[in-house]
Image (cartoon, rainbow, N blue to C red; front, side, top):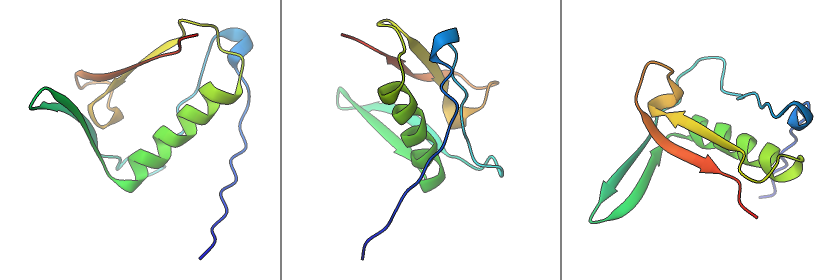
Length: 89
C-alpha cells in the first residue's frame, strides 16, 4: 500500500526560530530513557509525526550550525528536558 505525506510550513530559519507542530489534541507521549547505557526513545504515533515534522524543518531550511532545541517529556513545557537536538556540520 502506498501512502503520501504532504507537509506545508513557513520557513522561519532566517529569524533562527522554529515552531513545533504538535497535534491539536496534545496527546503526544514522548520520553527518552537510558537502558543498559543506550538511549531509548518511546513515543506514540502522534509524537513521532510531530518529531518528523520538526526534523523536516531543520533538514530543509537554512538553520545555522549549532541550532538546537530542548525537548521535554511529552512535549510539555512543565516537564523535564529529555532530549536535545543539535545541528552539526
